[in-house]
Image 1 (cartoon, rainbow, N blue to C red):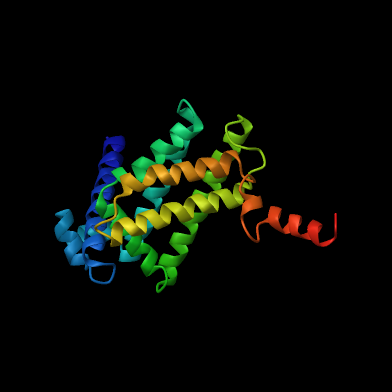
Image 2: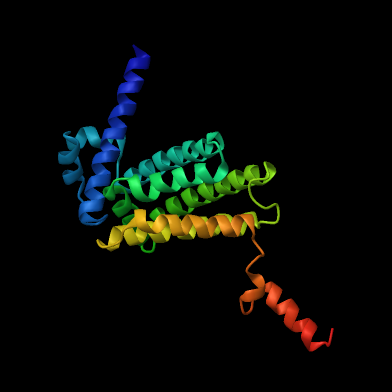
Length: 221
C-alpha cells in the first residue's frame, strides 16, 4: 500500500510539472500564475502547494526531471553500435523530436535566469551536471578509440552545449527554423572536430598551428 501511494504521489508530481511546463512556455515565468497552473493540472491550489510551494519550486522540479532524463540519454550513447550513431540519436531526440513546448520552456528558463538569482542557481547546477556527464561520455569514447585522444574534453563539452543551446533557442524563437535540416551539418562539424581536432589549425588565422608557423617564419627557421 505504501509503495502504491508513493508511486501515485510521484505520478502526480510529474503531472503537475507537465502542466507547469505548458503554462510557463505559453505565458512566461512571470505571466503564468499558480492559479493557471492549478487549472492546467486539474487540481485545487491547496493540493498543488502541498507538492510545490512556489514557481521556483516548480522550476527546480523541472530541472531535476531534466537532469534524470539527461543521465539516461548519455548512457544510451554508450549502448549504441557506435559513438557517433549514439550521439546523432541523442541530438535528434533533444533538438528535433522533443515537443516545441519543451524548447520554449528552455528559452524561458534561460531568459529568466538573467533576472532571477534562484532560477540562475538552478540553471547553473543543471548545466554543471550535464557538462560533467558530457565529459565522461567523451572520455569513454576516447578510451574506445572512437574520437581522438587529443581532444580537449572540457572545451569539447562546452562546444556541444553551445551548439545545443543555440539550436534550441533558434527553434523556440524562429518559426522558420528547420532543425532537422540543420542537424546533419552540425553533426558533421562535430565529428570533424572530435576525430581530427587539430586538422584545421593551419588554415585558421590566429589558431595555435598558424601562430606557431608564423613564429617560425619570423625567426627564419
